[in-house]
Image (cartoon, rainbow, N blue to C red; front, side):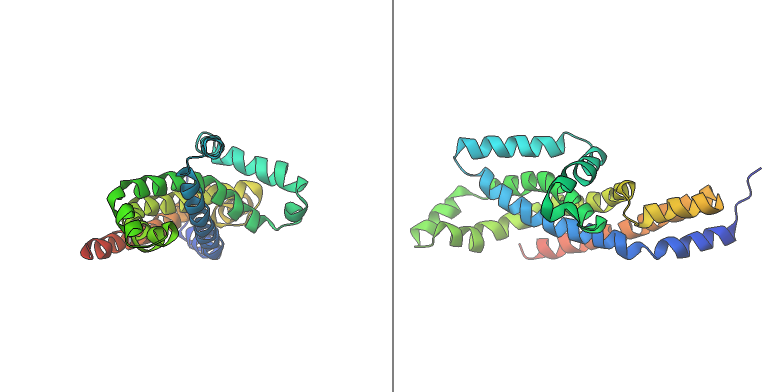
Length: 222
C-alpha cells in the first residue's frame, strides 16, 4: 500500500517553487509579445486587401487548428535551427516566441471582434472632426475595444499560463520539468505531481482574482 510522505511533498513544493519565476517569465513574456502581434494582425485583418486577408486566415487557422505541442516541436527542433538569427537562441526565448505565435492567433480574433463591435459612427465622427484614421483608432476606437476585449484577453492569459507546462517537453526547466526531474530521481510521483498541480492551481486562482478586480474597475468607468 502506498504511503504518502509529507516530507517528500514538502521537498517537492520547495524544489518546484524554485522554478516559478521561469513559468511566470514564460507566461508574461509570451503574453506581452502575443498581445503586440495580435493588435498588428487584428489591424491587418480589417484591411480590404484580399491577399492580406487570405494570408491572415491561413496563418490564424494554422495555429488555431494544430496542437500547441506539435507547434513547439516543429519550431524548436525543425524551423528555428534553420534560421541564422534563431539557431543559437536559448530555449527560454524560443519557448516564449512559440507561445506568442500560438496565442497571438487566438488573441487577434478577440481584438478584431472587439474593434468591430465599436459603433462605426464613432470612427466617422472622429474623421469629420479632423482626426486621422490612426488618431481615431488610438484615442477613441481602441480604448473602447480594449474594454470589450478584457475578459477574453484575460482568459487567453490564463490559457497561456497553463500552456507553459508544454514547454517543458522541449527542455525549458519550468515548474513542470522540475517536477518531472524530481520524481524521476526520488520516485515519489504522487507527492511531486500533487505539488506541481497545487502550485499551478494557486497561481491560477491569483490570476483569476486579478481578472475579476480588473473587470470590476473597468466596468466602474462606464
